[in-house]
Image (cartoon, rainbow, N blue to C red; front, side, top):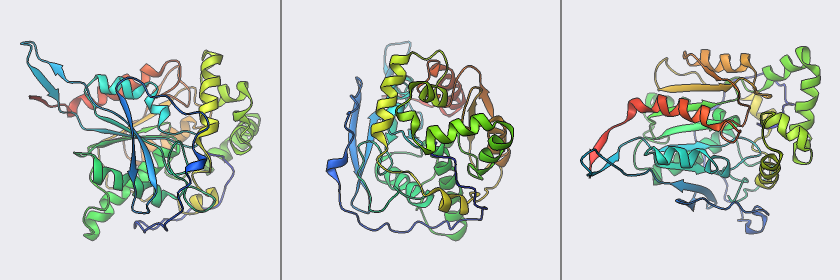
Length: 344
């Protein structure tokens, strides 16, 4: 999640995709510490309409055998993972891509523009809710074989919320398929629909010390140099220091520019509402989340009329934390109803 400073009032945003200006490719500003892929993973670069390339780490689902020894493919929906601020595709590739691919899910983790190994757009920020959601929509339309489940973390969850709103808007306005349909969505420690302003005010009045730490950690990027602050912001107390140092380095190298202009972002919120039960949705939070509090989690659940699930013993970076399996297993259980087994 990005810095928590902007407190402007919220308004509804426009919901059309606009063509982004073509920017000069900047191959020189890639991550200084490359992320090494795990067994079974590959990296591709999806060319966007702007001409920029978006990094995608891919891990295909495993093919199982039935009790008679015949090969079968578990026809699960593909999963497309969207990271938040200071992260990139690698944060999913570390634990959750191997986990879900082992259970038969084709898994794709994107790096938003200006993050990870993706190209850098012109300007001072990597995009807006509109352009980020549009980039994901373009990738799904061009590459993903069937309606996927989107999984978004922190500000990535807010991008997915914008995407969801525009599926319904496209249908109601007869725009066609600008935003391809989804099989569902999972919001992990997501920024709520109204943005982070509510979180900021609550922290300022009820947890002033925590508010100072969050601002110093994220706005001033102190998490990049302070091991204790990085651990407190993103991970559980029991997380091994060596792992925190590794992820700290990857986070530092991942984000070459902010995901958003926060003032403009908060002025465009809340995201448009959607008809109740119009999409299968899992809202997942972490009990020890230092950034998104319980009220923020409940706001997101209430907005979509679903009961949020709060996972005990994990922190904000649920997919990287020492108990990463807890959240992954809850998501897998939620996904099981979409399963179809087809002989090969």
